[in-house]
Image 1 (cartoon, rainbow, N blue to C red):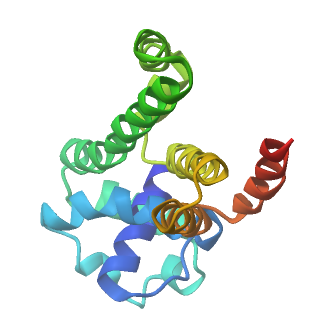
Image 2: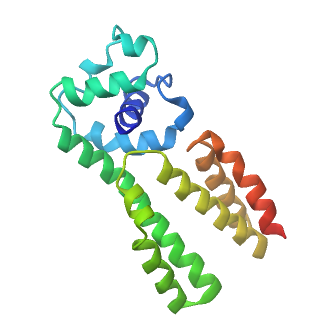
Length: 188
């Protein structure tokens, strides 16, 4: 999935064409592709030829494989750069775990919470991959946090942050609607 996710983001940035991999959401693809685009990979633009059969059929796996393995790009450099972009989400979510836990339980519990988060095999395994799962987990958590804050203190800032995080969640993946029943459960 990583080549498809990465190249979909590159196509979004370079051509503003969203035909590749739309079901995965555009935000994770952008986050993964930005480091690759800014590191000026040598075969970035030739791979964007519209005559490519994978491009014609909107097949991100074929064109992603071509970009990574057949156009002369340094696979390690491209993947390290794109995974670094996704790893930033690991830090953002860790910060949120700390802040939210501190708000509810205090400083000591927040330290335990972030230690558990940072040592979770699932989190560590997903954080370093160029896929949409961690972006969805991060934006979903931020959305719920700001909704929770809005339930406690209604202010312009909390409503704006809640709305922005919901928008980011919506562009992260199509299953963003699952935040609605989760938010309703928070009302109980």
